[in-house]
Length: 230
Image: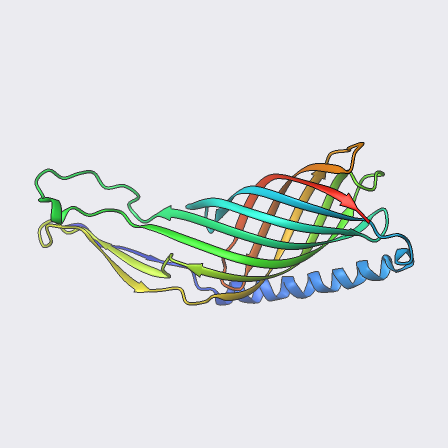
């Protein structure tokens, strides 16, 4: 007799405390950067509009998918800019044991398919970004900021996979607890490299890491394309 497989997400209380502490530090950092950028506020403000596509992982990496970003980048000087972000994400992954072989000894109505968990969300964030390059619109940039995320999660907080051949002819799943936590606060860190362009268009690459009060960490990398205007 096989032992039932029991899956539970880790407790989120510790992650909640760490996330809220990180958000407070990021807000203090943003306020400090805004004070530093104060002398440049009277200058002409240049903006950039970007659209980015990223390949990303949700959680421990067992769910992959994509993150689409729409960014408005506002420059307050040569080094400092603020990126206002609207993001959309979707990730999916198969439940344990990820794949079940066809058992010819069972009739069709007793065959078990592995469910696919799907998570989708929309989020808003603002990243205070520091440019390490001498060039204003190109080079390596580091951005950090708070995050507000709305998410619909088909991945349960706990489920069991029961495969006891001597008792049950058909393996089956039991959903123990669903995830009903939809609205969450978090933080995001983004590393970007924008390539120098002689025209108004700009091309760049980026990697990012984010986490929230529901312990939904997302890591990804991708490309972006945009243009600048005043």
